[in-house]
Amino acid sequence: IFCYLDPRDLIYLARTCKKLRGILMSKSSESIWRIARGNVEDLPPLLLPLNEPQYAHLIYDMYCHVCNKPWRCDNILWRFCIRCCRNCEKTYVL
Image (cartoon, rainbow, N blue to C red; front, side, top):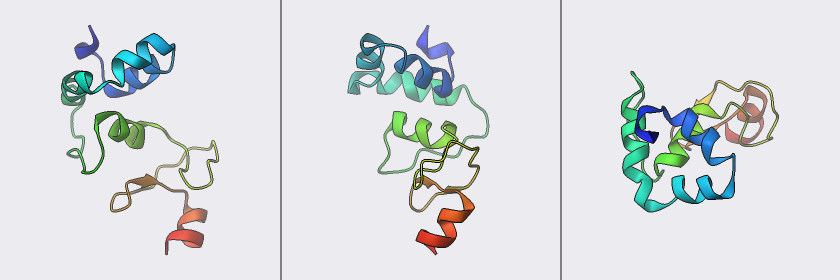
């Protein structure tokens, strides 16, 4: 069933309870995440050193990873593998 979902759904499921988190965050579930990523068109390829759940977190969690502000943050700094709002980008990254 997990393989029919997209990575965003897997993230949400992993956050529902400890048992599902244990299943979905284990190394043995890497293929589930890979197949789920394949269900989404036009996603950039997986970046090293990120694993599948970390990559899904980067793509789908829409908050700034620097200041943790909950507003929608669409700016991904690919070379640093973080999501960063414009204010933090100007202050900390540039």
